[in-house]
Image 1: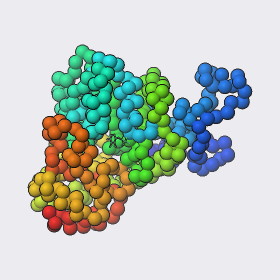
Image 2: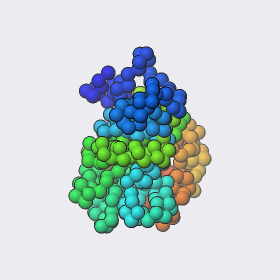
Image 3: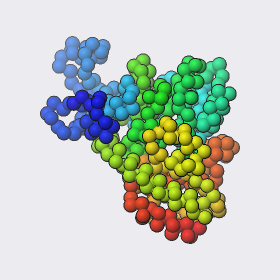
Image 4: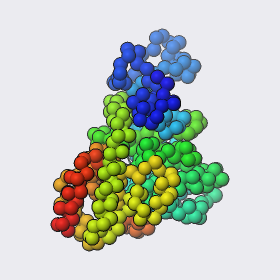
Length: 393
Ligand SMILES: *Cc1c(COP(=O)(O)O)cnc(C)c1O
């Protein structure tokens, strides 16, 4: 079915263009490592690219391909490259596009391991990096060097919920001949389409919203143009960080409800944010849907909704935050996000524990910051849960 003119929710169900030879309503799992050729000439033609055909699952597979085409369509990209995890996506991009002596500018509050792998491992190959608050466009400009090759951002940032201006970054990237890479995990294409705003590459930890059920780990890289797509695809097959067909099936299944899951979680988040903002024990709360968010207008201009992630700090700081986390009963005390269940966690000691204390402070990740990933439960239960836990603080 041609899905180009359908709405986003219809694309989730009918997009990607997979046509099953037997008419299966869902994409079947091609659980195979290799594909038999019709004859020697056919095999040679597949390898040379003269004929389109499957060869070997690390290179391509019909189930994985259906997911790649679907997500590329949702993000308005040229093509998708499915990988085994969000970090596999990060490494496919870093390794595929950075050379010895290159420099990247990135968000100080980027996902912890995206920074750790750069500072601890790519540095071994001579790649330099500078981390700034990319919500401040001037800070990005100041950090540029003659050898800068990439701007790598996450917006909203994790876990500070700072918003980076995507159009401004795209302008800087164009004027300085840099790649603009955006981690769109927090939003999903339902809430933000960075390629439409000028990014070259978007990637996802599909472990989060796209799969949405906290039952697998997966990643996806989407390139705007064919040249970048081919370069990154070749990197993925050579790194061997491909996705598994069963994983792809799970994400295709989870994706069908992306729109309704996000709408529901967002409705819950708006109510929880209102509740927390008024609570006397809250020092501050940051949620892009609150007028008190310093970049409320920017968020409204580039996001299609305010999402379901929020960060806050209790007046009692770290000790109070710990008591809150130890006393919630409905939300799980767990890292990750984007699933149907609400999760609460403490970035300074959990997701960002490997980031240096100085870097954390600079990025605004205070010791008392608590991150709440709102799920799709009944909001009354989530608020009651927070209420009883806050009473114990
Ligand atoms: C989880 C996450 C990643 C890493 O993804 P994995 O699937 O865990 O490898 C990258 N970026 C963000 C924003 C994330 O939340």
